[in-house]
Length: 639
Image (tube, rainbow, N blue to C red; front, top):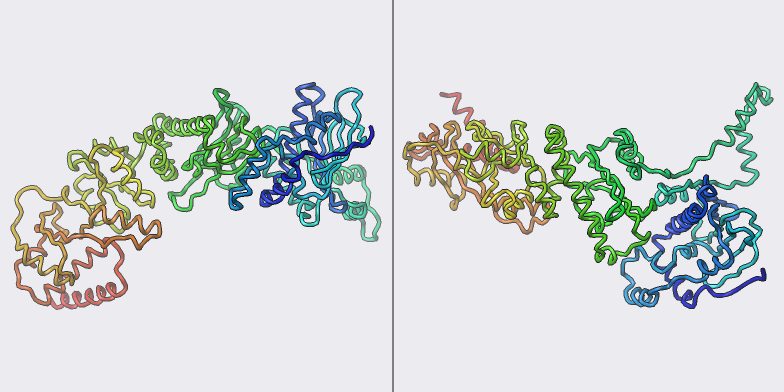
C-alpha cells in the first residue's frame, strides 16, 4: 500500500502531555496494558477458530543493546482498516471533562486514568521515543501493516514484512526510562500485573552474540590440559542445558478459577504461600465462585494474627478477568476485610476503575455485600458444626471478628451469637453461655481481666466464688466492650466490668462487724497523702484481702483509648476509691487502735500493695516501697 500519514486524533495534542504527566508514578502499567491487549487478540482468535488459537502465547523481549522492548502475540492480528479504527481513532468519550478536571487541581488522585478514554495502548508513550506496530490479520489474503509514531500524535502506515499471523509492538525506550530495559525489572512488573493472565507469557532477554559465545564457553567442560571433555550423550546434554525449556512466568489457570471440589487443602496452602510470599500456612480459607447475579471468583485466607490487632496488614488483590487491577480497593472490599489476604476476580470490572465509579455503582455494592455474607456464613457455619476447631482458631481470628462487628452492622448481626470469651480457666464461652453460668452471681454483667498475671489477686476473688472471669487483654477489646454496651449487642443494660472495678458480687452475705468509718478514712487518706480519696468499708467474702483499689470503669476505658491512639492529652484524671474489708483481721486491728507511726507505716504498705496489683509503681514509689518493706521485716523480726 502507499504510505499513509495522519494525526491520531484532534485531541491527541492535549491528551498525550497529560498521560505523561499524571501517570508518571504508574508508568509501569503500560506493560499490563500491552500484554492484556495481546491476550485479548488471542481470545478474539479463539472465538473465530478454537483450534487455530491452540498453543497461542505472548512473548516479551528485552533488548538492552537495541534499547527496545517488544511484545509479540500470535493472536487475531489486524488489517489496515482495523489499525485505523483501533489505533488511529482513540475513543475520547468524556475527554474534555477529563481535561478540565485535572487542569483545575494538580493534587487530585491520579490512579486509574489509563483506560478511561481508550488510552491503554497510548500509555507506551510514557516510556518510548518511538513505537512501531507490525501486524498481520488471520483473514485470508490480508496484507501485513506497519504503523509507526514518535509522539503518539502523528503516525505513518506502510506495508510490513511480517509473514505470520499476529502483532508485534516494539517500543524504543527513551533514556530516562532505561529501567525497562532491565530483564528483572520487566519480570517484576509482569509478575505483578500478569501472573494470572489466561495465556502463557514468556520473557526473554536478547543478548549480543559475544555474550552468547561467552555463555557457551562457560558451559564447556575441559580437562586439566584444556581439552574439551566429551562423553557419550554429553554433547546432546550440553545443548539441552544451554537451551532449557522456556517456562511462562504466569499461571494461566490459577487456583481461584477452579471449582472448589477440584482443589485440595495443599493446593490452597501452596497458592497462599506463592501469591503472598508467606511461610506460615493460613488458618482456613473461603473459596468464592459465583456466576449469578454477577461473576465473582476468588479465595479469601484467614492468616494467623497471633492475638495482635495493632499493625495487622492484610492484602486483597483485585483482578478483572485474570488481569491485576489493584491492591486493597476498599470500595470493593469492606475495609475490615482487608485484615485478610486473598484474591478477588470480578470479570465485569474494567481494567481501570475510578474511585467515583466504585463508590456509586450498585453492582460494586452487591459484590461487597455478597463477600461479607460469605465470610459470615463461613464463620457461623464453622461455629455451629466445628465448635472445637472454631475455638482453636479464636485466639487468631477474634481481632478480625470484633473489628468487623464494629464496622459492619449486618456482619455484627450475623456474628453476635458466635463471639467467644475465653476465661482465665481456659474455657470458651459465648455471651449466652456466660450469662447462663454466672447469672445468679452476677446481675446483667461480665467481669473480665485485661492483665491476668497482674490482676491475679482480684481474679481469685471471683473464681473462688465460682464466677467466670473473661480475658480481654488486646487493644481492640477496649473499644469492643464499649461497642457491645452502647449498641446493646450484649443485651439491654448489660455491662462489662474489669475485676478491679466490680465489688458488688464479692460482698459477704449477712451482717458485718461495724468499724469506725471516719477513723479508717482519715488513716488511709493520711497514709496515701490524698485528702480527697474516697474510702469505703465493706464486708468482702474473702477475709484475707485487707484492701482493694477500685477504679472507675468508664474513666479508665477513656484513658486507655487515649493511650492506644496516642492522644494522652485527652486523658482524664484517674478516678478510683479505696475499699477496706471489714472482715479482715488487719483492718479490724487498725480500726481498734490509736493512730501512730506503726499504723501509718502498715496502712501505707497495704495501700502500695493494692496499687502494685493494678500497675507498676513509679520509680520513687518503688524505692520507698522496698525501704518500707525492709523496715516492716525488721519490726517483725523483733516480735
